[in-house]
Each structure stands twice: as structure tokens, then as C-alpha cells.
Image (tube, rainbow, N blue to C red; front, side):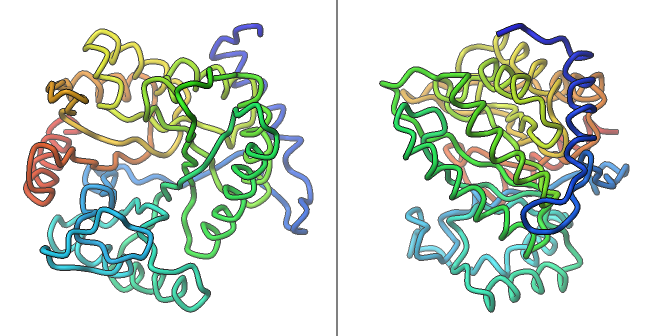
Length: 314
């Protein structure tokens, strides 16, 4: 594969964006490229993910629920975040939804509106986006398309499908580009951004993600930089990872100030440095708080992350 410079990528994205302005299968004219009206005030740029609060969220697909803790339904999450943190953006996970019935999705969206909040992204499950088995890749595509349709219903501008691969399968740029390309095309028709996160160091390596995005060349396929997930390979690697991820980011990042490794090691994140990289790359999207609960209470930790983030954005 020929490596693309940022200028090459943006030029290709612009050209493909023009071709994307066609009538999709749904009969709806797709946008040439995503155009989200981002806020400028520091606090208005912050969001909170539901992942750190998984022990509290009642859902039949949430296997991390702790019955010893008080429960909440996801449709009440926006109100809790607004009350506890004075943040009016949320980034929930798909498996925290109690249901995907039309009635529940309507109630979920109304809950967000009542809280005076906004949905800025959905974190999804996924599947074998580069699995050698074509049927498994198709399952991942079909799952992602279903949740893109749900994103339209609930008012989310973006989704983040998860690459769920065995570590026995070597990441494959060509196969991943084919499947993510199909998802991104569908996202473009529905005006939903598709984000790729540097979650697992092997299956979702940041430099692998960048290659996939550049190969697809669709402005609706972007990166979702997680400030801490690549820190397990050291501070120098994490800085390089954030450089390449923020080069391709559009509307979403996840903020961590530290992460715990598999054997209890603590990897600190230089928040000021990463926020500076984001500014230098011209990133204008949201910063979603995703406190690592290995270090304690998610309410205290999220509040601290918000305070640190606001200082970095000042």
C-alpha cells in the first residue's frame, strides 16, 4: 500500500466526499462530508462515557452490573451526568441500552432532551472486521449498519464499532479496509461518522488504524483517539500514537489520566501534552471522560478528570 500524506488523505477524502453526495439506498441524499457544529467553550466540549459507570447501569446485556450498588437505566444517564458533573454531552455504550425497541429508543432520546443534553457518540460492540472468514466480516458490517440506523433514531452523530479479533489473527489492512469501507459508505448515506478507537494494543494498534483510514479514504471514517489505551507501551509510544490518531480524528476522543496494565502496572498520561497535540492538529471535537475505575470511584475520578481537562483547555 502506498503511504498517504495528510495532504493526500484530505484531498482524496474531499474527492470521495463529492462522490458521496448521492442518493443512497435509503433514498436520502448523503452529505459530501461530515459537518458537526462543534461548541467552542471548554466545558461544552466535554462529554462523559457510560463505561466507567457500568457497575450502576441496569441492562440485560451489561455483564458488569454490581447489584450491591444503586442502579440506573441508561435513559437516565444524561440527567445524572448533568446533575453530578454539569456536563451536557454523553457517550454511551450499546450494551448499556435496556432495549432497542422503538418505544425505548424514543424514551432514551426524550431523557437526553429533558436533561438539556446531547448525544455525541455511541460506543458499539463489533466483530471480526479483518477475520479471514468472509461471513464473520459480514456479520460485523451488518451489526454496525444496524447501530448506524439506531444512531439516526436517537440523534447520535457518530458510532464507534469495536474490532473484536482473536490475538491469533494478524491484523490485515486490506480486509479491514474493505469491511470498514462498506460501513463508512453506509454511514455517509445516513450522515453518521464511523470512528475507530485505539483500544486493544494488538487488534487496534493506532498505526494500523491510520493505515485502514487512509486506505479507505472516506471522510466519514475517522479515528477516536483514547488518551490512555496506548500508554501501556510507554510514554514515548503513546505520544506518537496520539500524533497519528489525532491526525485522523474528527468528533470524538476519550480522556484518561492513567491506565492500569494487565499485571497491575500503572501508566500515567501527560494530559497537558496530549491536549496540546490535539490543539496543534486542529482538533475541534469532543473530549469524553473515560476514567479507569481500577483507580477507584468513577464519580470522584470523573470529576477530577473534568477539572484537569478544563485546565488544559483554558
